Amino acid sequence: MQDVAKVRFQGIEEVKNMNLNRATLNGLVDAFGEDSKKWIGQVLTAVTEKMVVGGKRVTAVYLLADSYELKEDEAGYMIIVNPAKETVQVAPNETEDEVNPEDIPF
Image (cartoon, rainbow, N blue to C red; front, side, top):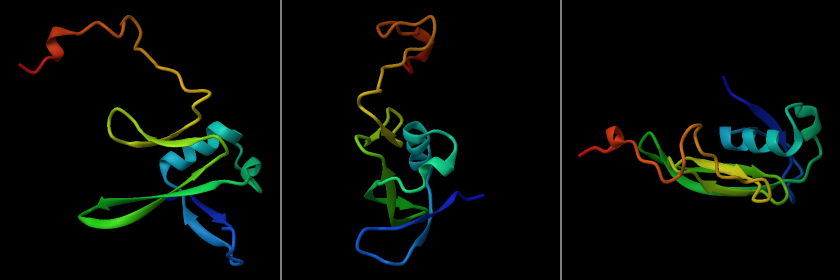
């Protein structure tokens, strides 16, 4: 299953069909809500990132709403966040200073 959108880029008359990656989808939902009809006509910034997928170098395209940024999370995945909304999440019943001895590999 793929999430596809029609995208118009500045300076190009032809509308392009584009597969939306998970980071872009999550960022659009955060910015404009879950109803994709509200995404129509929004001005976005396209950011490209070179990466290796299946041993092949490809260019990923991320679409960002105004004031959103492309970042890498703790696990190394690309995410789109709004720095004004960004908060540090701590698991329930844990503080940032606690370490579970069973999680230490040595």
